[in-house]
Amino acid sequence: MWFFNSFKSQSPIMASEDLRRLRAARGYTKASITRLFNFSNNENDVGLSAISDLETKRARIEELFKDYEQCNKEILALDEADAEDVEDYEAKYYNILTILNEAIKNKSSSSDAPSSDAPASSCKKAKLPTIKVETFTGKYSEYTGFINLFKAIIHNDRSIDNVQKLYYLRSFLANEPFDLIKNLPLAEGSYEEALKLLEERYNHKFKIVNEHINSLLDINALVKSNPANLRQFVSCIKQSLSALKNLNVSTDNWNPIILAILYRKLDIYTSRAYQLERDDTEEPTVTEFLLYLEKRALALENAEPSPTPGKSHHKAVVNVTATVSPACSYCKSNHRLFDCSKFKMLTSSERIAFSKNNDLCSVCLNKHNGKCRFHFRCSTCKQAHNTLLHPDSANQPQVSLISNLGHNGVLLPTVRVKLYSRTGSEVHVKALLDCCSQSSLATTKLINVLGLTPSKDNSNIIGAGGKSTDTQYSIPLDVYSLTMPYRVTANCNVMEKITCQLPQNAIKLDAFSIPDGITLSDADFHQPSEINLLLGADIFFQVLLLEPVLGQQERSAQPVEDPASPHPTVVNTKFGYIIGGGLPRQQTSDKSKNESSVCKTADGFFAT
Image 1: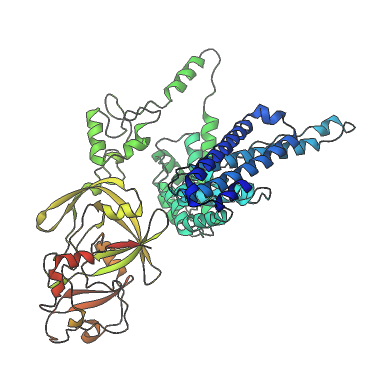
Image 2: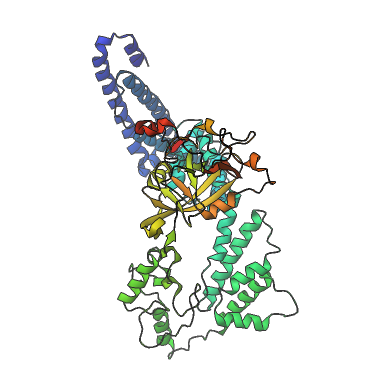
């Protein structure tokens, strides 16, 4: 270490010479690390090395990495613009250390084998299969299983330090979970912080329960009953119900609801057979229903004809060949069109156009001559066509009437709400509550700040005077109150701009009195601000709070000078009190006439 410390006593004139020497020293250290990296990744070299040799190399890599870090610190002190890729050599260091530790551990355990006096059978050890941790991509229902397995294999292993545990954890994450912790430094304290971030983000019982319930609602319908389809159907139901019970969700009284959902998924023959066989004097249960399906699957298996030698062998081969799924006519993969995820991502108009252009049957989505042998109907309108070809309601025009945008005599109610970005940070947004809009809206600017990716969704927004605007994307946003523990999900269409700054002109607060003892959701309601979120009528009427009837004087923000003039009304909501309505005449601030002063107060949202 004397080599690095000696540079600290150098005069500033020698800085360039010191920098050259430090970079040369770092280059030598990097070359040594690379040689050890190549050695450790060669299975033959590691396998033939003695334990003492591996331990020496382990001590050497630890010493080299300390020198490498010291070099970087000294270089950064002299040149802050140094572009060294530290992350690459950190990864090499942890890779080398992991391989050497595992090799030393394996060789040590093998050296503890019984002596030659012991029976030959006792010298053999069964090699257990390697446990593979599936990559966690952010699905709530998979988080509990992932984190429990990770803790059992990695977290509870005392031979691994926290830095190595963090390295393992990062290797098992992808997409949003990886982005959540990727900026944490590879340091001792970062591991616990990473576990905490994942726990806060994904251990949400409400979300997990919802995913399991949705899996019941979205389970594939049985178009034709055969043993494989029935057993898969039963397996999916049991998995979802067992997961709900493990989450302490009481499903004992859900029998009528679950059975009503599952009846709709059965083919007509299975449904008819179940209704004929069940006991009409007893209330049906899910357990009884699943038992019947398992018995039916077993009966179908036993009823399948066995091949006759000589004659039916060729026929059996032909049948097997005929049941192989043909290539999808849309993406050319080995599945049917109605199972194609890419086809489902299209808008209904695009799916209908594709079906017509390729002469596909509107019922089974296949090509055939004559009448279709299937008789199922659209689950939405009950007409004789496939549900995927039903026109989406999302393609029908939605009305969005932002009230009185151009009139300075009316104050529109605004609220301050909280959103969470992709990285988990809070973002506070000024939103407009609009009881005249059928849809909620969000600006592209807000979506970029949140770091989220909207879904493709073509919609037509009709405004005042019949003017329409096409939007191509939508996204669900969880909107949180800043005044009470409340959250609501708004499905927002994404557009470049919602409206102008609101209010259009600054309002003098001394023009009227606001009742005492209330907390306004938007304390800056009187200042012109950018609007990046609009919450439509479905949200507006959810957040209104019913209160004891107040007197007109208590509920209204009365004008100070002229009580008879128009005045706004104060209303309580789950976001806090909002204020809106008619304004006293000529109560806009003189400052509002200055365009530059309005721009300075336009802070539609800010990150915390």
